[in-house]
Image (cartoon, rainbow, N blue to C red):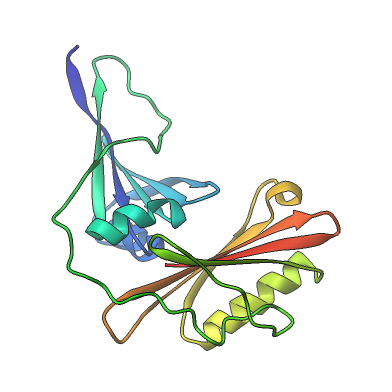
Length: 201
């Protein structure tokens, strides 16, 4: 089977928006699509025949912890190009980084009612979930304000199927130790209440 070329290059990054901004402003790419999945958010950029997918979120954390920001290449066979993009490409791994400082949950990152959160330690991330009764909008506004007040850059959105999937926030900041802190918050309907999931990477 002849190889036609590279279908796309996917970049895994801790902070998607600055990477998208760089490639659109400095490199002449155009953002043509955006996808929000349960564990990542991706943007599809195009310049001529070149396609670049920029992805961030909990689904990329294992790769990022081991290798830092990196790229995966997808070759395509001879024939018409596929216009959809997929997340199952085998990544091309850069050299591993040195050891990083352990993650620490900020004491100010609390429930909407001010109560402390129960933290679960996972590979490369810390996670907490709880159920809350305020409206989705009130929960989202609370966390957007809280994160902004602690010098996080906040991006937020609402799922097209908001009644089923709710909304999300992504917040990033650079820490003193040179590490970037990324916090994802997902707010999903749960009957009359809302399930809130916070992930720190």
